[in-house]
Length: 482
Ligand SMILES: Nc1ncnc2c1ncn2[C@@H]1O[C@H](COP(=O)(O)OP(=O)(O)O)[C@@H](O)[C@H]1O
Ligand SMILES: O=P(O)(O)O[C@H]1O[C@H](CO)[C@@H](O[C@H]2O[C@H](CO)[C@@H](O)[C@H](O)[C@H]2O)[C@H](O)[C@H]1O
Image (tube, rainbow, N blue to C red; front, side, top):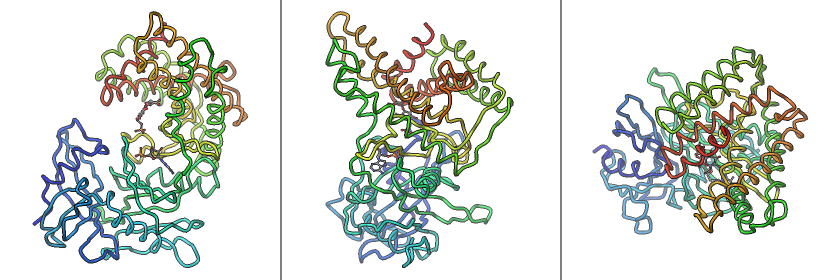
């Protein structure tokens, strides 16, 4: 019997990582692409790929790590997928392997034994009978094979499993053939000795056969340093705003928990990461045609967004004018960037700020995400986060006493402006360039355009995912147009 699609459909439909929610889809097929070696009797640890076919004719592939047990496992009832006669292993009780410590121990052991040789050099050899699973390692870290796995909860597009406080494995859910930027960029920054990323320990490739018979590789997972002392940058920013709002008479620089020092350190960290990326990936100086093409792409995204968010219409002319100024630039410098930077992608550790998740915008095709872009895209992403944080706290604070909402709005704007200024000043100082505000017109034009592009993107993101927050980017547009 093949894998019963109805049982897997339930797993996919309810999963947080499934990006096809709200679209009409069918499970077109499920393919076993590998099995972990050395499983004990009564257990098989498999990796299946589910093919999702959408009504509009497009297809996505999602990775499903499964634990196939001969006997039911009460301890895993929360991760139960189904029960069926597996083609390879007979009658099985099937669970989501990422919840299962026994299965995760086999994944970790495979990294330890298949991705590195006795001298500590990456020497992958097939980890399964089919010869398709290849575990890779970077030298310099001995994995703690005694550590227990814990699956991270939370709203994420992939699934992350911590191994004690030693390592974190990110299992990519939506997979496509080709280089995953998260792995490629972490590898480069790790080898460059960057202090602003979690060191890459290894990654898992599926060496697959294309439909046309040529080999292609799908990157399935990455293993990296677990940042033990990390606090999420977004949570820290919210806490700082709450402190400010609790002290109605004080300004941000007079209240405990002022964020400006952290914003400046984030600016320095981003400039250092950009410098490392520029040293290891291609950097190009492009001409006026490239600026015009970028402006057209942003205008195209605005047109598409107007169909989804009619409330954008009053701001369309002013947004087009911003993109029009970009069209007039005669050159644009591009390099590898993060591509989807916001406070939720930053972690504050005792050793400073770390930047995570270099996968780029999940909605973009993989090949596009490694294309060079302007550094101002990342800068704009962070600045939009400085605008979001106080608005989110103000929204959650309710109406309060008469005039309180207005007072909070004023203080929210003050918090955002203070942190934007601190971040930008530190960023440009570290890069040794003129700032975009009044000093370098071209940089100012680029930053404005990327800010506008991001706010348009956010209206669509919020309309689709958090309609209650759509007012946040719309309020930013309203303020900048008044
Ligand atoms: N090296 C790390 N150590 C500890 N926590 C991490 C590390 N990298 C990421 N995280 C946390 O794990 C979660 C998911 O990380 P992220 O890379 O953003 O995954 P996704 O691609 O699923 O969005 C986030 O909450 C992030 O703060
Ligand atoms: O983290 P992802 O790569 O999935 O990014 C998406 O989700 C983000 C929200 O989690 C969204 O970011 C927007 O909301 C943030 C607050 O939750 C805010 O800090 C960002 O500035 C704002 O853009 C991001 O846009 C989206 O791609």
